[in-house]
Length: 272
Image 1 (cartoon, one colour):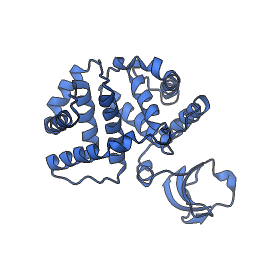
Image 2: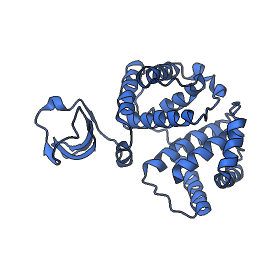
Image 3: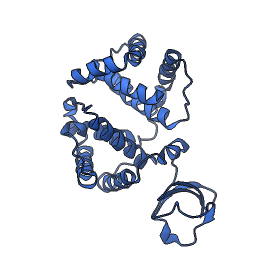
Image 4: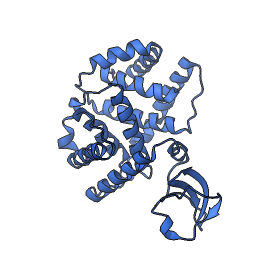
């Protein structure tokens, strides 16, 4: 195996003998001259195959302690769930953990009580999410509000590989493309559709469109945060309002305040 690029101290990009490019994890694997060959297999603790390029680009910005914590949570999830997960699960979960900690640190706490039915729909995912929040408290000494449980459940569910033949998400692609064009026109910018930020935004949109299609509505009370975001990001709100009008016209679904709130946050991240 040949190390071809350092991601950070303990993660690197490598090329296997068959030519496949993978992410490898191991203590100090990113140190030393690059490129170089790894002859001692004990240096490589984990190999991640099939990770997309955009996720790899984002990894260098993720704190190593959060990546390690995410690995532990994913290992626990795989042990307790028979479902298959996305190749990017470790890294998308790490991104969720980092964003949640950042948001809670700014006292931007969401009320997820509208997702209490998750314990009936996704009992195992709820168990794993409780484990994740407990590990964050133990390892990072950060106690997240109980209301954040729903966010972790959504992240896990979105990372589960859907059965073959389920092309519902593919059918959302034209809508997501049109929504992206609305954002580009509003902010007069060009969005890189190959970027990790766009992949994350598209994932959120898929989840939102799924819920709208199924007629699911939230009952969370985030009015204080919603009012705060309207004051801080009036331009983003105008853009999201355009998206809401587009969805109402095209799929006959009206966004509520919570859905508008989440969209404001994700549009901000996409355009940052």
